[in-house]
Amino acid sequence: MTETYRAWRVEREGEPGYGALRELPLAPLRAAGGVLVRGAYAGVNYKDALSAAGRGKIVRTFPCTLGIEVVGTVEASDDPAFAPGDAVIVHGFGLAAERDGGFAGYLQAPADRVVALPAGLSTLEAATVGVAGYTAALAIDAMQLNGWTPQTGPVAVNGATGGVASLAIDMLAGLGAEVHALTRQPDDGWLRALGAAAVAAPLAVGDRPLERAAWSGALDSLGGAALDALLRTMQPDGVVAAFGNATGNTLPTSVLPFILRGVRLIGINANSPMPLRRRIWSRLGSDLKPRHAAHVGQTIRLDELPRAFEALLEGRGRGRFVVDLQG
Ligand SMILES: NC(=O)c1ccc[n+]([C@@H]2O[C@H](COP(=O)([O-])OP(=O)(O)OC[C@H]3O[C@@H](n4cnc5c(N)ncnc54)[C@H](OP(=O)(O)O)[C@@H]3O)[C@@H](O)[C@H]2O)c1
Image (cartoon, rainbow, N blue to C red; front, side, top):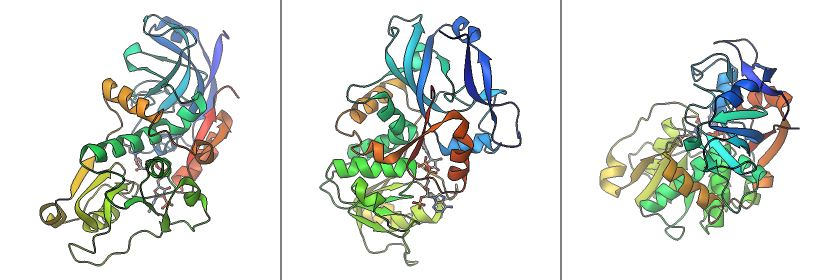
């Protein structure tokens, strides 16, 4: 084991630039106990880009290693639940906010926050899935628990080239659903290769409280007027899973989709308790396993993070950036 490791750090609040690569001693991580994870891959999320740019007030403890998720192998564990060499996933629970995150060669985490890599996923596939794919799977699972099935009718996914949305399209198509991808981007075949049956511009609906009923299910990355448009175009008993706020935090709408069509609006928060995490990750390795992870993921080095942050902040990201932590 080397005595130092590399980590992408922000040193203080509002720091100019996007943080920097630092060499840190390993001894404090070893001394902290819990599980010591040698990082393999870490997906990059919009939240990381905000933190790197000093926005969003996500990081609470400075200095802080960024990266809200990581996949790697156990180097040492003081909990018998994990043994050296086990492949694991860590995300959420204050990672890259209150404690050091995953853009690093090593990470220390309490054992009760570590998920064993499910059967059916490689470390690279799991990192490509990451929090984005976990959120997509959680949304699909919630839709199913609320009566949606792939046979009920078409599903709309907005912000379609985004990390969560693109993985959701892949998963939904894998389940046999008819997926309509809504995107600002030109249709160059990328979303169809994931399984989208149709690719269309963001919804432009009229101003009636209820418009033509089109979708049995919908996944919303955006919030605001885009979520309102989905609600007003749902079929009776349609289910909408809302997880994103890429266009804002407000939701101007009316109660009519709820009381006249029985539309269900489900909120999705990926920072789930552990039993739910294990169940969803198990689905991600089996019936919800994305079939096109290699198409969605783009592997970069730690020192290329600023390029990924910029692309995400400018809405130019497509699919997922995945950092090769040992590369
Ligand atoms: N609830 C949770 O636990 C949870 C977990 C993960 C992520 N999230 C949130 O979910 C959202 C999506 O996350 P992500 O990782 O998929 O982000 P992302 O990769 O940045 O994708 C967001 C997509 O939304 C569209 N978009 C972005 N800015 C827009 C704008 N100003 N107007 C219209 N469309 C815009 C773009 O798609 P097109 O160019 O294709 O239209 C973009 O690719 C974010 O708000 C994120 O914070 C929430």
